[in-house]
Image (tube, rainbow, N blue to C red; front, side):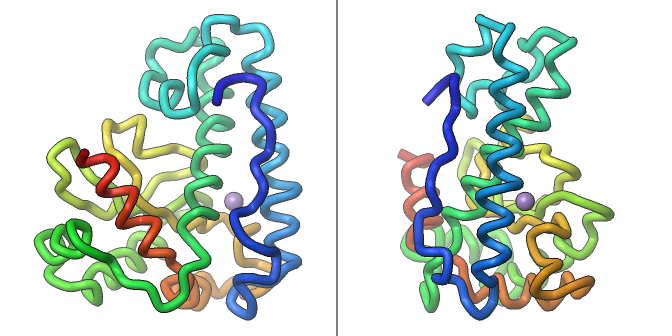
Length: 205
Ligand code: MN3
């Protein structure tokens, strides 16, 4: 849905990710941080009628077509909205595992799910400062792990993001303080692989 954007509710209850992620963290993260990205995206789009017709995906996939004086604000805030929606959507699936095509693609790319976790944690810990680690697919469905700074999105690199872990401190500081690795370890257990597997299939057609 295009402009004006409104804050989508969390896809589960605020206590659904306890004890790994507290209600307090989810309230701050979703209701305050994400709301701010929604508000700032609408502000950035308010005087850019051409951009208002575009979806979040279209904005992020074609940053070069956005007027230059708007590009940074839209990259940061459209990314801030899109990346958070994906981050929240990809959690809430305790004990699930990659299914079908995605399961096979994970084995092709990484050898095993365990090896993928090692690579993903390396990316999450290796992202200096704020950003995300991602599992993403290219146009042929081949998977890779990447990291991005700030609110940059793999869509802007021509990749299809399948899941992400937010490693901004606001995502984990209340529950884990400076222990980003502990947060990432706990996050692995929260992944909703049914959602992610389905997202992979939708993209592959
Ligand atoms: Mn965040």
